[in-house]
Image 1 (cartoon, rainbow, N blue to C red):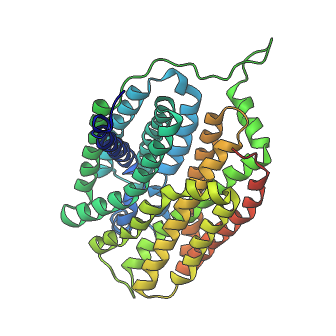
Image 2 (image 1 turned 135 degrees about the vertical axis):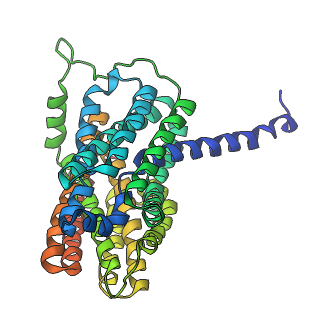
Image 3 (image 1 turned 45 degrees about the vertical axis):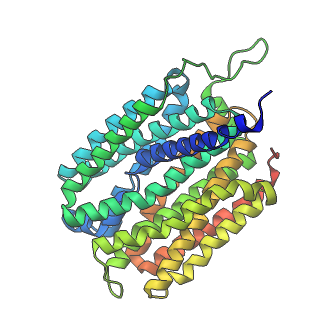
Length: 406
């Protein structure tokens, strides 16, 4: 029998190991999605460089969300045949190619295509990493692993924008993309060192007795016919619609009077994501205590409280509004993701893939429609479009209560 003295050194050792694991997973997530929204911080400079409208540039920059949606569905179909470690590693290594080519994109069409390619690579790495975490951690450790990954994704919003703004301000637009290509390769190197290879797994659902295995399309159709799941997919669409609409076009607002901020200063604005890094992992606790629907409504209310603040014309009010929008939308996204997983009665992987596809398509729609509102009605029009999306998500949350509880 071991005495207390023998056990004592194991406690800090386990704590240190858990902290290191959290840091590695979070850093992997950060380097996987660092390109996704970083370019939003230099939108005014890109629009001027290509000689296009804010709406056109905003849609081109956020075309990566289309690639994320398509890539997520493709990986959902093929993931059981892909070694997780090599799939993530190759995806991040390939990501460096379109990232570097953005430095010399000759026109907006090529720029848009390269952003779609980035989205495809990021989505493959993102989806396969989530699968790796679910398959390699027990129920007790999985919650911490996913919390680490979510935290890293949230942190990438801040880090990516800061790097993009700083690189553009000190090096120029083109060299900035080379910096991100190096970050992509750093992510691939981290995966090579820290992830272990996985055995080839057949994760296809078991066939019914005497029947054939259900096809992926029939499983997806069943998910879409589930009212609770369909509502969850639509809520994801609305959440990223609001997020993209806000954080894409606010850059143009901040570059103009009465704010008149330079690129470096606009990059520093994104410290508004710091509170979200701390609060997003709390979504699971809130759902466990209050339920998914109340947590969603509270999260969406926080985001909605940002809307009037962002119209007051003062830096302090704008910063407060951006903080609330970030905290609210990230909490809502974490809540909706968990809800979809619980509400699925079969093949939760397919349900999560459909949710992510809907989520990222909402981002593309937000970039386009909020851009049109910005061109027609200014920042107030964009804020109104964001408000409509949040209201739609709140209405859809009524169906969340129809899902079975975990």
